[in-house]
Image 1 (tube, rainbow, N blue to C red):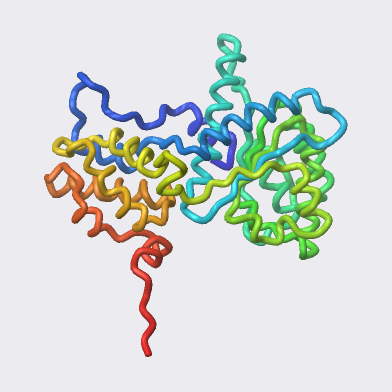
Image 2 (image 1 turned 90 degrees about the horizontal axis):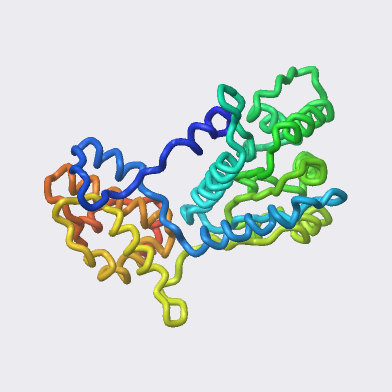
Length: 323
């Protein structure tokens, strides 16, 4: 997805959809593929991000002289940050395509969204090269950072890019010389491109990203969207149980009894520490196992048999200290 062609395929391919009443049963292979890809579960953070992006894109549409306000999606690993980022990007892409359809017979597709990953050990030049690669802008090793940046700004503006998504932003460290130069590049891009910038990274408030003068500039322009673990209870609501219900309703298992998974909400919260990524992985793996072994339902025993990511397993089964 870090090229325009890849993003176009992602944005225009119909996402997985749960089974609908009355439709023909899916084959085993179709159901395995469905639970592998699965639906995007709408969490409170995803809804908040979507609303904020819409507002900031309108707010910055006619802003010309300074950098537009931006958003940073932050939270621990396996909290659904990238999923939220991609979902909002897809929605923006499709909304723009509906409002601005390509002329009949035209091969030109709308380019409203750019998605860029911060490479490990990023320098300003390697990052701007990633921006160029996304739209297929030719670069050579002899080109300077300034030349590539000028080409990127010209091409992105001409292409009508309105939303720039930058993932893995926690890889930047403005305390280092290369990190400071890279942060300066991003600031330059936010001022030169007529687009809203949305970043995503792991626990960015605990990283050097917000430190020093450059960090203060970013913090002063960016709104944080916390994509942290879902609480078991929030006032009178139970957001984690609500998400479990949504996941269960999307399952395609022949013998699964509705209401089974929400009853295990306390166990599932303990097992995953409330992280949406760990939760969906746990249930998807259990569903795939249930299809393979023919039980076609998810039980607590089946959930407990699934080995999750190391972070979740460490939380669920803490190692005991030996004396």
